Length: 266
Image 1 (spheres, rainbow, N blue to C red):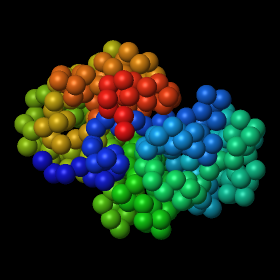
Image 2 (image 1 turned 90 degrees about the vertical axis):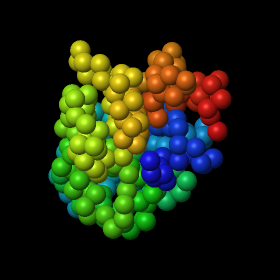
Image 3 (image 1 turned 90 degrees about the horizontal axis):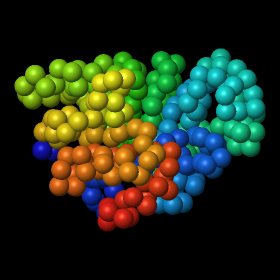
């Protein structure tokens, strides 16, 4: 099995389990703000889950929604607005929407799990990663494998990546009947599977799913888990204390406490 990519390694060189702060960590709802990322890093989180959207003039922001309406004091579709217009919007009426490049520079030791939200963002995102030489510090993910691959093919160097919906479905539904050799070929440009525990009535995250991923050398991260008891269950899912490789959470504080109690914090 090949050595894990640098993105997946903790500062002590271990590869499991990772704590990923979902849009940073803010009990005040200041998601994807520099303040939320600062709080997460301040309690020792090294991996920040976030979202990328580009403005009409190609500035790459860390922002989840297509429009400003839900979480800021402004309105409008980001892809139709210039960076100068968006810069006036405030998350929760207080915090500016951060640029990816600024966050990469402010937190040089942080790793970013970046969800590519639309086609418009693909080329600008790849350009920022190349310009900042951040290839070892980011994981590219998207619900769309086409968008994910669009970023990867534009990058000058290898970057970690997580499967989109289609490849995740193939892994979950066809994986039990496909030979590992064939499944590995299908998943050739994937390093991780990031999934919810269940999708509708289908339980995705089972010991079989986890074992299959391990045989193929794929990391398994689960989102979004905020209950300590569920965190414990998932960290033990594979038996012998070898559960999921990472947990995405809104409650980075509770995940830290859980990992500390298990002797798995650093």
